[in-house]
Structures are given as structure tokens and as C-alpha cells.
Length: 275
Image (cartoon, rainbow, N blue to C red; front, side, top):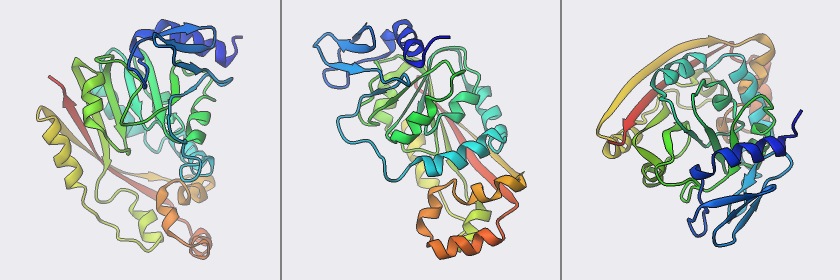
């Protein structure tokens, strides 16, 4: 069985044209376990098969394994299965880039006929994503404002619950490419918000409007359902979201005595075409 670093090197060799150097924007060659651009900038594969393209420090403070592990458990338990099923209706054959991939579970569960690429700024997330031994994909630490992917190299840019950079998205998209953006709607995780004493309903219209400004040729789909939380994952639900950062340890302990038993998933899926 191939080591992860060998699998990644083979995957990169097959997909070199999809990458570019984030410093000089030239193409890459692969030299054993390293990408080397035509200007000599070198990026080494680590033993898990990922690369750090960042010129600044990775996030090791906010989005950590402590949050990603419960999120992974809930994704694997099917909490987002209807959302992913809807996304798959839009995904076209060709390369897919998962923006802010986190710990990689969304990308792992999507059936894509083409290359899979995921990046994040969170070090723990990319380390966990690289643990999916069965997943044929390339993961990297990268900057949203300076993507290490070539012009017109992606058919689909997937943007689930993460920030956007539409200038870079348009650059890496093929002429007939698309962005699929998933944003929370007003009742998303309302049980968690209610348990933490936060405002339940909120408005994301500004985010929708910005998307439409960049992709006037768009469609919008609402997905709204309740997911029954398995008993053994109810405590994980409390720590799967950045919402918990706003709550004291004492408040968390009180909520943990009677955790929510269902989770509302209420999202908008926006599909924007480049052409």
C-alpha cells in the first residue's frame, strides 16, 4: 500500500496544470516530494501528503481539532446529507475546488468526476483532511486572496459556510465554470443559538446580494429540515460551531445538562455561472 506522501506525489503529477506558484504565478514541475516552479520556488509535501502554500502563519488558535472532530462526527452521521445531495445535482464533471475545506468531510462525501482540491488556513483542518486515506484529493494550506491554482483550472468552486473572494474564484474558474455557495439561512442551528441564549433568527441577505452582483446568472435553492441528533452526538453538537466561542465555560456546562435533541438545517444554495 502506498504511503500518503507517495499517493499525493502521484496525484500532483497527474494534475500539475491545475496548480501555480503563489509567489510568481508560474507553473510547477514535481521533483520527488516537492513542487518546484520555473522560478525555483519550492513547496514540499509533508508525510501526510499536503503542502503549505501560506506566506503567513496558519491558524492554530481558532479552528482547531477540538472543533473539527465533533463537526466531522455529525457530518459522517448524515446531518448534512440532504444539502450534499442537492449540491451534487449542480456539480459538473471536471476539477472541483473546496474553499475552506476544514477537515475535508464535505469533499470526502461528494461524488465528483474529476480532480478534487481542498484548501484551508486552519492547520488542524488540513491535517485531519489528509487522514482520509480513501479520498483521492489534494489538500493544502493556502490563502483565499492568492490561490495556488492556475487560471481557468476549475470547473466548480465550492464555498460552504466560508468566506469568499470572487476575484480569485473567477480567475481559477474555466469559462463555463460555476461557483456553488452555501450560506446559513435565518433558522440554521436555531436550537444551538437558543441554548446559548443568542438571537435565533438572522438575515444573510447582504451575502446573497454580493453573490448576485458577481454572478447575475444564478439560481437559488432553499434546503430546510430537522436532523434528529443521535444521543451519543448531542454533546458534540454543542461544540461543532464557532458559536460556542461566545459562551462562557459555566454556560456551556449548564447547557450540556440538557443538550438539544434536534438540529435545524436551514441553508441557501447559490449557484452562479461564470459565462
